[in-house]
Length: 203
Image 1 (cartoon, rainbow, N blue to C red):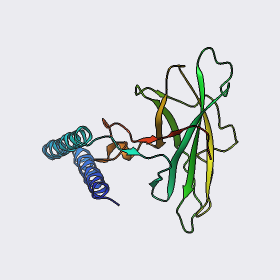
Image 2 (image 1 turned 90 degrees about the vertical axis):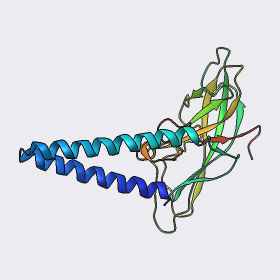
Image 3 (image 1 turned 90 degrees about the horizontal axis):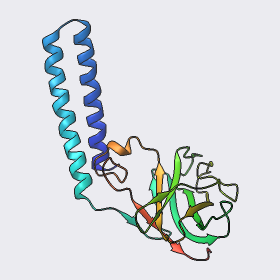
Image 4 (image 1 turned 180 degrees about the vertical axis):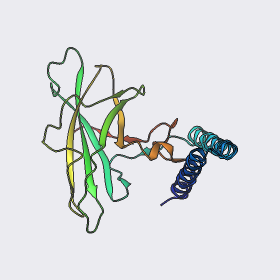
């Protein structure tokens, strides 16, 4: 757990306590107390938002090397590479299809787990992002369950304009609470981390 994770937990608990105090005071019709607590909470939320925005603007975008593993607790993911594919998404219409290979793994020692909210976008050199155009061609999904220490690869098809070249993959593992954790790769106003990819035949 990072320092910013701890700051978020403390901030969340403080906000919850203040919200309960406001509710109790409102039920008791103690309006001066409601006003004071509301002001305190409003100032605190505003300050937190300023720090969140400042950190997002000040910290550079994070990049992962091809094959470098990134872990969310015990669930990990790595972008292995991309390769061109003929009509992986159906008729081409002058566009180009790509197959991205992603490795999903678990570093857990005992618990079987899965990431139901996991997903991937491909980003081209101009910063445009694209969703997969079809389900995984190998029947695997990033949200499939993993036994402790297990890993598997997923092949995801994407369709890009003929002139576009993939720059990397953007991985998703849910939005909350990462979008409101200061300094997190997925925090609000910050460019999400980019997993660079090797272009060519996959091992």
